[in-house]
Image (spheres, rainbow, N blue to C red):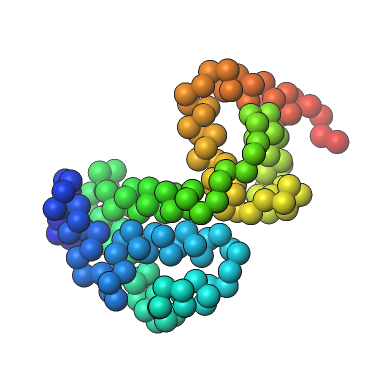
Length: 167
């Protein structure tokens, strides 16, 4: 892998060099975020970007290989997966707002997901998608790490729900 570290030209080289069909790392992350919304068939998302299944698959293989190579070569200092993850999150957050939920509601959601062994049923009960859950998780990670009052409320509800006997 070339150009794997540093900012500026090196970063641009890593995210664009060799990109099949002109699908840069950022473009791939944006399309992946659109697919992850789950509100349109994959074929419709690809068509909107004038891509075939084959082009998308080739691009996906390329970028997933680049990320894997970066991790193998650089371990915890790998940058490509972090850049991709940030680009995906930014694209996903730009598509829809974070669903309204207070700290207590988020604590209840987290406990319900844990109790259910996965997010499908608790999200469906609330009319939320997996993409909504990811948006909520990112939002509340920021809030809980920076707002002591919200963090206190979250953990009070979280702990109370875990202490309560099952229904």
